[in-house]
Amino acid sequence: MLSTILIIILILILIGAFPAWPHSTGWGYGPSGVVGLILIILLILLLMGKI
Image (tube, rainbow, N blue to C red; front, side):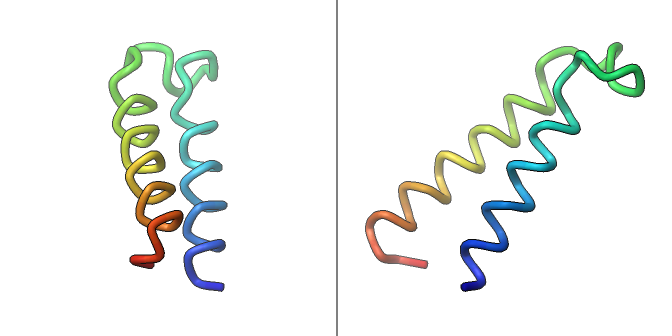
């Protein structure tokens, strides 16, 4: 249950950090790349049963 909520929150953060939004146009792809990497790591851990 907690891991599902965590993944949903990370997906929302990833969408918010995407550089197409006006508040994040100067950030580049750095924040969305970092959040995407964290999301991939959490998905791997979830599939392995570690979370």
